[in-house]
Length: 626
Image (cartoon, rainbow, N blue to C red; front, side, top):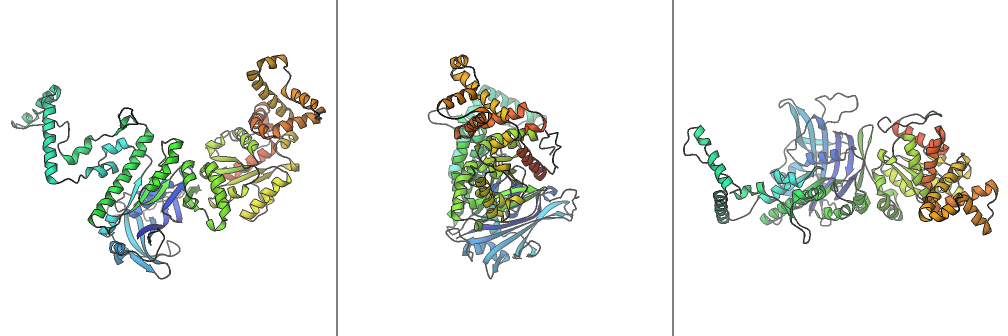
């Protein structure tokens, strides 16, 4: 039987004004940069360890607030007993009862035994610095304010020995670990459990090796003689200063340690010659080695003893290419202990369980944490989200907002108009534009709701398309889509291409198709292009009419164009070039179609707090100006 960190409550810590969340065995923290993921890990580390340094930087300060030295941060954690299947149970094992003692264990008549630990970060006037104090939570009520704590007390010695949180940040490098005596690498390798007589023999041999190296290396021998004269400065004639090319003490051998890495029959190279991806991940693996060493050491002394570890890992995928990231998660799950991991990798998210995802985001500078509400999902819908959303479009979970559009045409065209309107690529602002083929609005909207990601829809005006939007929004939000300003529907039953024509872009669309096809033909059939230089659409209409089609006059020309643009091949082929032609060859507000402008103005207002633009002037402000 074991234990689990089951609940965390944090108040006034760094960017977190208040949050409360249940934890699983594996917890994947996702969201954009600077949204508080590292702060969450740091809070856990402070709560479970006793000597983590703290400062005034750990106290949440709202915009315009001046930090008072009476203000404190509070981190509450609840530890619950688990059975052999890692499910929460009512009673701690005898071993954990002995570790926590009745000083820390509380028994709730409804939920069973737990250990509640409150860590308060506050200013200590006596020492003129911020310090931490621990208290047992004797009544874990609905809020931090309502909960009841005992007097200030220290962890038992066994709690210090058998419970720990290992925090590894994103700046790890095995080269730095080699130099740092407190690194996990050196902690894992410095304790050499050798009999005293073996240590004595090895150190005697090391002394002989050192003497041999110095005696037979003229440069070393000469240098040793000269620097030995330091004793003369102090009037000590018998002093000796010796050079040690190799440490004579086993306990100091780590100082000269190096790592060699070899692939197949290639040369063995120092780890210093490897890239950051390899060095970063080896640093992670040394943590696993250290934990394994600790666990085996504890079990060797008493098989009934256990080690409880929380791994707070920051961006384990850092510096790794996408295929390495895909293999990464399997290795992480093999690490012993409860895991709380921050990531920016859609590859890791794709392999995680939906129940293990925690989404962090900021509103008005405050960090919020959300988890999927499984009670609101059907089993088939969860499978569809995993299959069609997370594995193929997992990047949306890291987005500032998502725009759901009808299909591939809009997915390719909208970024062109977005760049023109905002002066920034949507990716640089964290905006995910997703074509959903008119089918699966519900899954995307359900995730957006649970993770509180702002969302927008631009839909075709056809009845079937409107019905899909209507039903999805009704199911998820129980409102009429027509009342929502963030849902833009094209007028008069139009699809995207019809809207462009109605908006006056017909000739630009024709020009775009002709230019594209002319460039392709010039490359693959230069003789044909020279022999018949007519525009592509003219030749296409002539060819189709000869087959019995009736593309006559301007209406026929329009029908032929729409046929080319709206078939599956044409949607992917022409969407970008048509949007590019419109943006680069029109002026003023005409650079962006009417309904798309409407969408962007709503985004501008919702995300950046700006009002609608002047009718005759588009902005080119960056995200900072927004």
